[in-house]
Every structure is written in C-alpha cells, then in structure tokens.
Image (cartoon, rainbow, N blue to C red):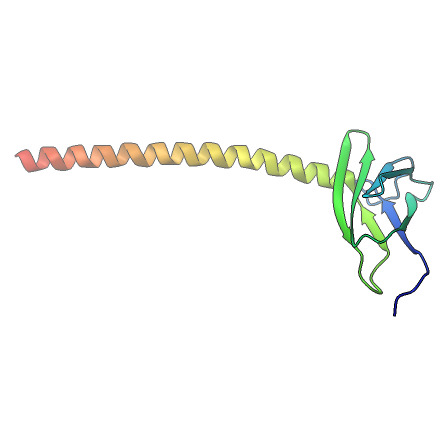
Length: 127
C-alpha cells in the first residue's frame, strides 16, 4: 500500500574526524536542489518519485558524489564524508600510477631476460 506521506532524507556531512561539518554544500539530483549544512552538519531533502538519487557533498576542495536508493521502509539518513573519500581517491590514483609503472618495468625486465635466454640457447646450440 502506497503512502502519501513525503519521504524526508536527512544527510549528515562529517569531517576527517567524523565530526559534523557545518557549512558544507549538499546537492541532490535529479531535483538539483542545493542546501548548506546546519551547525549539526545536517540538511534535509523531501524526496520525489525517483528511486535513485545522486547526493553530492562539498567542503572546500573536497567533493564526493554517492548514490542513494529509495526502498520501502529503508533508511532515510545518510552520512557523507567528502574529506575521507577525497583522501582515498588520492591514494588510489597514486597506487594506480605506481602499479602501471611497476607493470611496465616488470614487463621490460622479463622481456630482457627472455631475449638473453634465447640468445644464450642459440649460442649454446652453435657449439
């Protein structure tokens, strides 16, 4: 049975120490509504008929977008930490660069060993 009561989604934005972050900007899409968090780091949005929303929270240069799926009797409170997510993104991008470099270097070293092995086998067969 559907209800006519509007669903209110409360979003709490927290800092690196998981403390409420007042003054952060939060937007919700598809409605494209933007609000600023209060002293408790909270904003509230009235949800429409969509089943999925993209929540974007920004604080300084840190921004994160997370999906929120509306379910019957589901949670209507979401905690977002843009600073933590930004630091994880930096770690992932740094490790990607290292992994790509390691992969290329490792492949080059293996290739050199294969060529040396082939040359060694060729010289050995000539004796």
